Length: 457
Image (cartoon, rainbow, N blue to C red):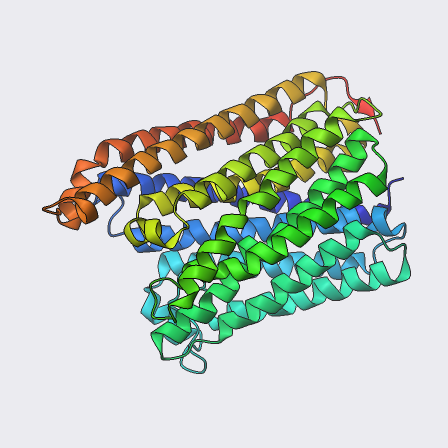
């Protein structure tokens, strides 16, 4: 059954896809600046391009999570959204805040932006991924509280399901851990210690609960497998995620000045972190193999399966490659870290948002699925983006291995810049792979405008 208030998810999905496109464009700019150092300088310096690239990543994923939640909650709770008007108002506030922040990065020197936005009142700026001005951070908190109020009130008045419970825990955790963005102690060790409470406990903690909830919802819809079976899998994945993810934060404490025992805690529990992602892969394939119906949306099924595989490879396998303290001693901060980050974010979070968009957008447009020709295009977009990301990861991994050898292991280590010159070939190959990724994204976006005979909702 479709609920009218689910329609508020549509602008969130559209905004997410638009910001995703922007993120990839700035990624290509950064990639070119690695090999053509004065490209777009001084108009867009590397540090500004990097801020925009990473901030757009965070914001478009948050738009995707919020849109997914607004679509899922009415169906799961079997009741209309508490306040569709509040959801739309928060959308415009969040979009305006995000757009103004990006414009601020691009048009105002960062130090001046800090002065103009009240950073002297509470110093929160200047930290990686948390570069947002104080006023933007306050706006994010206001939007998050309004969003959580709307969702929680809807769930309280309707049916309670395991999927909604897991999703709500993830969303509340996301909001709570973001509050540490306001805590910026003078002591650098303490600063980094709590900075990871935002960054790590988002992407390797509560975001994984959101990922599990969205994937479980889509699999129920496209396979027809009993809810009880899917929910049992979900509980197992959530338990493994929380145990390994929370204590796995220790792998960020190896070299920041924290006590030595974190090398053991971080290594042991980080080694367990691939397990929930492997379980998620088994979960997705098992549910599709046991399906009771042939859903007309083949593209959404492909995205769901791809999410499990790529999340396991990116967050699990590539995370494990350099997570043990004796290995991380040499690889920390190298291009191996960048390889892991690119595939993990794409596989775990970008793909699950694209999964729910692939499933939900046709329904929001009055059809069960897009036409066959549109789905073929969408699946072309899937394969182009996914294969391109695999090559981006492989090229960055090769660059990282060579970087570690030349700069940190060799008997006569090379300087940083000399090392970068030696690995520039891999940067060029990464850049061309990024161009293929952009083409795949454009094909994916075009598929929504492709005409043809549609299955009825």
